[in-house]
Length: 327
Image (tube, rainbow, N blue to C red; front, side):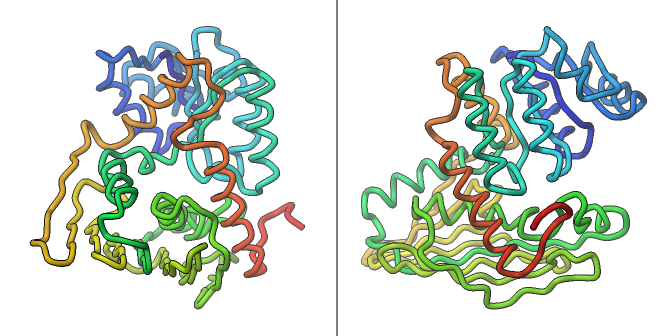
């Protein structure tokens, strides 16, 4: 598929590097767009992209581009996705998909009306290790889920810190990395939580969250804890406890290894390495769905994406943390 990349930041570079390595699969980078021509030109030169534009509108209008990867700040996702869909492009949009749930609904509805593919780029959902983990849970290997915990934290400084916490860009730890935690919990449970309690939250001088600890209860009684922070280093580990065993993931984001312990058996280390860096699976899924004429993925569905968008929105609202224009 012929890809255009909208924006030229760090995550866009990772995406471009991944597509570069997927040429044998038919993936191509044909255009990049930025608000600044110099940025687009430098990005295009770095990744051998033939076309570059100094506006998002020009990229979206390029007839050579079949699909657009949207990698702009969080608050711009809605308008950027809408622009690309209205120009007849398939869209893979970086997470978090939108700031508000009604925006997500409108975009998925527009994709259906236009018969175009649209998916949130929640790449860990499609990792091979999680396919294996789903099989283990479905088989009842560790019995009924009883307790899950996951944590993710890092330190940002300088301009990166300003950007991560900027309210105008949809900043804060929940939207930036908490989506990994909450998405991981949905991978395991397949459900919306019945109850979400904020045990701790800290709102910083930017007016956004830099730490939160959430307690979630799922249908059937499974309890979960999610800790997300930008300000301290936390290993990205996760623990899953069932009635007949447990699973430990030393890194649930870059998930390639887990340890399975079942009562009466020796612990088993399960490894499912990625082919490139993990982004290749969302790219393959987008291309697969486009070839099949789908407007959404049947693996990471619009319903899953919307549920996470709504969960994060409701949680922010319970903190009284609103971005510009929210009421």
